Length: 181
Length: 199
Image (cartoon, rainbow over all chains, first blue to last red):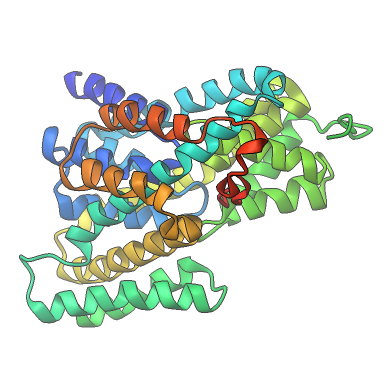
C-alpha cells in the first residue's frame, strides 16, 4: 500500500513535469525509481525503457512495467493512470481556453523559452539511460565498444535514411543475443 | 485559421476509439504524430491541416506526451469529454496490453543470459534512437549561444548533478521565457524569426 502511494506521488508529479514530451522526465524517473525508491536496478531501468521502444503506441507506456516491479499488477495500472491522467486532464482543460490566448505574444515566448530546456532534458535522458546501457564501467571494454557502436550506428542510419526505428532496435537485439555475452 | 469546418457528421465515440486504437496498435517505432496526422487529417478529414497544427502546438507546449495530448484535443473537438477519453484510451491501451505481456516475460526471464544479451543490444540501440531524436529536434538550437545557455545548464543540473526537475524548471524556465519576451519590432532581433522546434 505504501508503495502504491509512493508510485502515485512520483508518477503524477512526473506527468505534470513532462514539458516537451515524455522523454524530458526520463532522468528524474530513473533517479526516483532506481536511486530513491530502489524499485528497479539501473540495468533493469534501461531494459524496461527499451522494451517500451519495441511496443507500438506512445513510447512511455513502459512506465507501467516500472510500477509492476514496485507493486505487482495494481502497480502497473496505477502508474499508467498516474503518468497519463494528470497531463491529459490539464490538456483537456487548457485546450478549452487556449484560443483566448492565440494572439498573446507571451505564448510565443513560452514556447521559445521552453524549447532549449526540453532539449537539455532530453540530453539528460540520453545520459541517464546511456550510462548504463552504452558505456558501463562494470562491463569489459569490448562490450562497451559494441554498445556504443550500436548507438552510433543508429544515429547515423536514421539521419541517412528513413527506417522504422523498431526494426533497427530489433536487429540490435538479435546481434546482441549472439555477441553481448 | 478558418471556422472549424466540422465534418458533416462527427464520428461516433466508438468509431473514434477504434480509429485511435488502430493507430495505437500499428505505430511501431515512434513518430506517432505522423500517424495521427495521417488518419485525422488525410484519411478521415476530421480536422484540416491548420486545426491539426494548432492542436499539435498546444500538445507540445503543455506537459505530457505530445501524441496523447493531441488525441485529447482532437477527441474533445469532435465529441467532447467522451471523445477525449475514447481517443486517448484508444491510443494508449493496445501498447499497454502488449507491454503487460512483454513486462511479465521480462520479469520472469531477466536472469536468463540469452535474454540479458539480447536486451543489452536493444537498450544500446534505444539510446541511439533517443540521441538521434534529441539531435533532430534540437537541430540548430545546438549552434545558437542563446539556446545553449539553457541546454547546457539543464543537462548539467538534471542529468549530472541530479538537481530535482521541479527546482530546475522553476530556476531556468522564468529566465528563459523572459529572455524570449515579446519585444517591439524596432528591436530587429533576428533570433525572433527562428523556426519553432519540430514535434
